[in-house]
Length: 92
Image 1: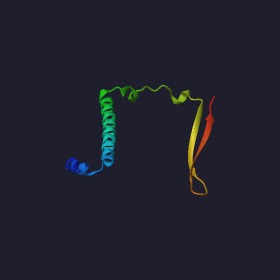
Image 2: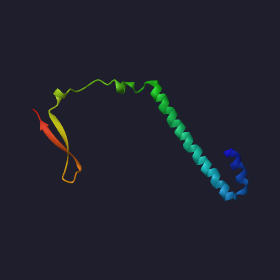
Image 3: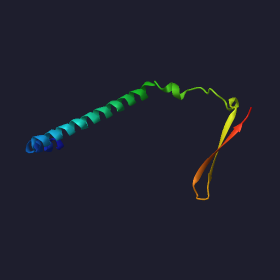
Image 4: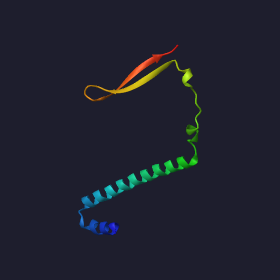
């Protein structure tokens, strides 16, 4: 239906306006093709299992390995604004 309406309208437009319609239609087609390509690659990646190794990554470090810890404390100031305060705790 929309294509039929467009086909009827195009011959009534001046050449430069019809050219703009064609340019815009090409732009929309290109955008859709890029979207479809990205979506297709995303689906293929999710089904392939290529990134499964990232979900199963082993723990490389344990908290006992750390020499410094940062303590994050959230509070509010006198203006009722949320603040985050960082404290460095060192252990040697």
